[in-house]
Image 1 (cartoon, rainbow, N blue to C red):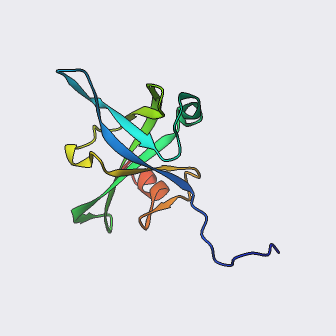
Image 2 (cartoon, rainbow, N blue to C red):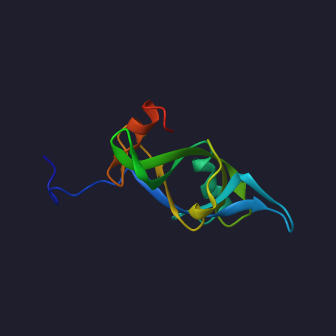
Image 3 (cartoon, helix red, strand yellow):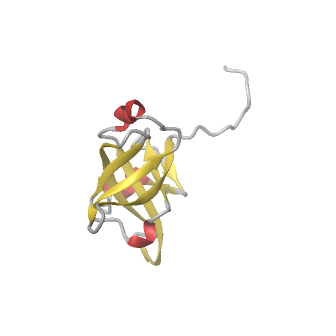
Length: 128
């Protein structure tokens, strides 16, 4: 048995912030989102996250499958610049209200619990 704090939770995901859509001076491209992952500050650190899955979890007014929480799944596609920003594509484009909101990148896909919702469960049910 390992000595230490008992009952301490191990976080199985990484948090991040949705910055906005990829854009140019006059156009924006809502099919690609720009994200800042906590603790990622260089282009080299982004390489580990390339191809990893992301979950944008939000609360809806109407219950579906016994839960008010919904999930939009996405994937990190590449880096954006040199300061650790990543580009990601989600299954459906992120809504404008998601800007400056949180997202989660589960490390253990089937057991990641975020906001009391089992993300793997949502994926199997066809919501993600």
